[in-house]
Length: 96
Image (cartoon, rainbow, N blue to C red; front, side, top):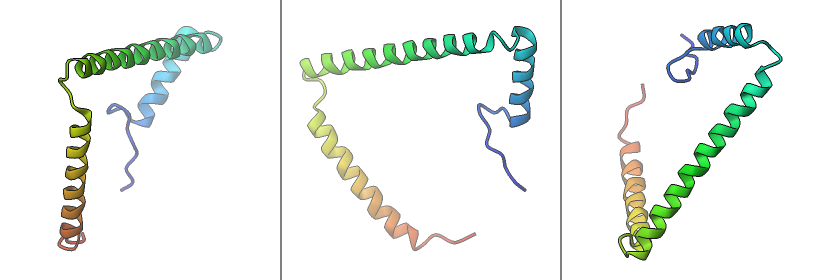
């Protein structure tokens, strides 16, 4: 059976149906304006999220709460162990 990718648990047929209803309700001439507005809103949300992340990271560094060098070293060690484990278990996994 062929499995189609889904977006937010909505299949391709449902997406087409929703788009058809949107065209009927708003009209084809309003769609670019609506899409532009949604795009601007999503961009503003992304920018606000990045600003908040930056401010939290900045204040954490100033307060010496987060040591990024230590965290990076720990993450590198975790990745090494993970790779070694995958190499070891890769030969033990059964093929389906």
